[in-house]
Length: 552
Image (cartoon, rainbow, N blue to C red):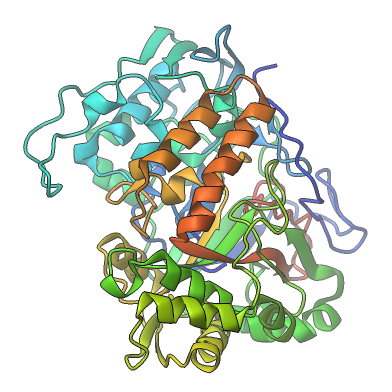
């Protein structure tokens, strides 16, 4: 999932590290913290930046909208906040397969949408078909590419990529409703880890009301989660959600309501949190990190994130078409000094495209992620790079990126003799579409947080040919059939070990071609006010709003 500011059948993948911290007063747990809870549950506020798209699960691939949807929806499976493993605490009762190709999904009875309509097998099948159908231009379409019949839902195009007709079908042949609480999913190839993926928001169900007026739904979604939207989301302002008392899960919301407040500037939000006018921030501005622990005490939360910050390269731009140029820029960056001087322990220098919290990570896999100015200059000279023209460095505004991006620019200028211009005036909702439109005129900040805890999620959605925009997050526009084939080999493997071997071979191609360069992994710092307790932020950088308690 693209980041803004900061994005049995279920197999364990050997995840490591502490993924969650509940803090405040006596430490807090899911049964309550140290303070007395408000009699009616109370209300609390959460900071977000402006979502990029309408609040439709299949359309939302960034952290801001996804956080709101996480309060509004519950998927087939959920992810344990301590282990990251997929668990059956969602709508699915079981997901089973005899051949890892055809999966039978059985649902729990009694789940309803916020308008009272029942959550049925058809709710998932219809939602997935809508998202996969290319004329709908859903950003999460490619998550269904491994289901049989997906290709038939994609409109034909000419060599220039222009649509030349309608798709051959409107429904994937690999989806079949068996009865109200059972549906069957046939994949185009075996994928042992498929059940782990379906906790992601693209796989959420949709009620009949969505298909009657999707535009209205995008403003005021009707979900099946612990909170409901009784009013539309207001751009630039936010939305207040209220507790859904008929929630089908075993852990309903503690609070009566949660208000998501949109801020244009992270620093402004932090000042409000300091003043007690905002209750929860999922990330603090860089200039607050040095004093946050002393100021906030146990209201400061720290958690290792399943994310990566990269410097993406516009491979479509002639200046950055040569992999040696991209490798040279990578070796000109001193990640260690930036993490120490600017992030002060809240970032870890990245040496792999895969995050350490998932199986398949190899420390030191990236041979050009260490500072090596001499070799960088040799490669740049060999490529014939024009050093007389400055490079544009892109990042989204208002989220504290300017400080460290300027440091990257200074290192490039000092190490390579290439000047730079900072391009950081676009809001997040403007920045992502420009990436999709090949509008980056130089290296650009790219953030990703895992959708599900599988190594492939750090590779396929960002660099496979099936994930090219529109409808995908491969904004470097990298395309390599050998890379795609290795990903498919990993997806089709019948053991986790064989899958990891293929994924690592695919990563080796990225390390050679360098469409982006890994920069940092996050040790995220979140914070909350004295008004709330039992605040949980997981490795997906999601706030468990249902768990939050308002204390009186």
